[in-house]
Length: 120
View 1: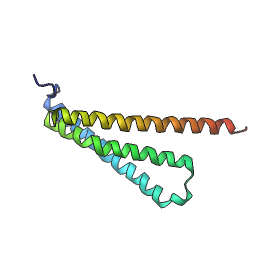
View 2: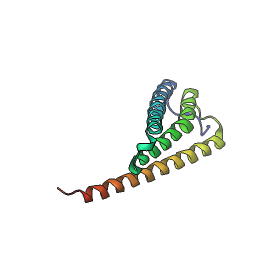
View 3: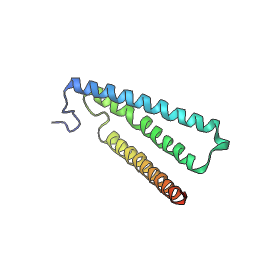
View 4: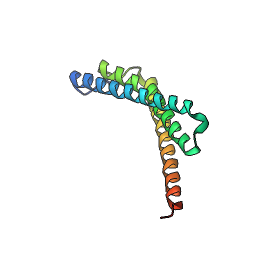
């Protein structure tokens, strides 16, 4: 038995690939729109707003680096590329995941500090 062969039915793999494709397109378009708007108003952006831009960059990186491989593997009903692409996929997922988590943590800390300084 091949460890990279899908255990899902071919129909479910095709549906999964289509679903991931829709999510990828929405993610890429949405994050590109955020980056375009950030470039247009870059002179008026405050430092906390840059955290949102950073989050858009990490999400866009994950969408571009990871979703095409997932969609192709789902439609193929088999993981493509063997061990090498499996390691690439894991490294990309780890890198973009940790970057997003760190960014969200900093955003939460900034919002917490701001909320402490508000007087009723």
